[in-house]
Length: 343
Image (cartoon, rainbow, N blue to C red; front, top):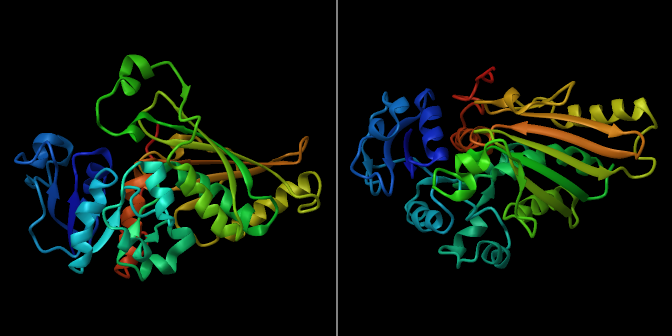
């Protein structure tokens, strides 16, 4: 199948190109970039020299699927004509993630360019929406923070062992902010420092609430606090919720029962691993895994779940390719089987 990438010059776009290079069924034929149009991909990213496509302003080739790594609003503007022309789309921006149009426009402070397409979009967290993704022509790739948080909490919410009133403490590497220059991601500002941000509400918050609410079949209350960590890539999410009285046995038997809930929920999943110990972000560096460790604080009877992902792979490009595979009835793991880089 012929593939195009909108905005290959961002981190997510370049990661898509890297992954698609090793995909046996994908033929990357066109890539765009706004500021680097006219250059070759090898000039901007020497590590992608084997691809060496020209970076163009817009895709004119015939393609079967387009990945958009453009910013919100610009992404929907670019994706709309492709969708109307019959091309399948995986949008890595936030433009089609939220079901509620007014909520999207409030959080992102823009008018949606193609609101009529929102009903066609499927939220592309494959572990929760596999059949819908497979049948869709427009998939909204999840945000990086929501991917780790939702996968960490969905089994407990679905089993009804917690109330959908949760706390998510997320810590992300600097690549999550993109390639744009800014003081907040300047080396001297980030190095040897950790900071919390968006305390009044992060744009990924409604996404987490929406999906956990769908799992619970009721409104989810989410407190989400992101932090910036001085590393390049990776997200560690520490999630907390009070257990319902009597939902699990007391003591160590409760921890064993909780683990069984998670193992049953993710049984057969290629990319979600229920671990025997708390994960490190390096356990997922460069691959499409989400590693999850569920346990109980026996002193407070509180659920604690830790998850780790690579924000540029399972949190962006890898999940996008996973969605593409489903959309074209290919093996879900095609082009994505890789062990983490270590150390």
